[in-house]
Image (spheres, rainbow, N blue to C red):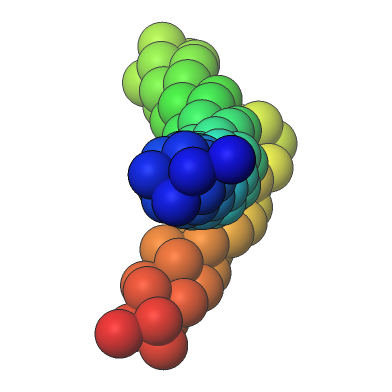
Length: 107
């Protein structure tokens, strides 16, 4: 083989190695991006669950309040509704503080 053929083969091998390396880097970046998206989805699902808990507690307070106004007296439902609202609010604030501290720790 001529010297030119060897140079051509070496150049092609180098090009294949470079393209292979670029594909490997792209795959690694996609894997990292997918991992980040999965983590965000878990956090969003947790936040949605806590938000629904807050809405349920709010509804319980509203119903208990309506019954109390209608009957002109505080009823047993009010105590439970207040307890549920306090618990839901505490859980939500703990979630917010945890997420915020995790983000601050990353930076």
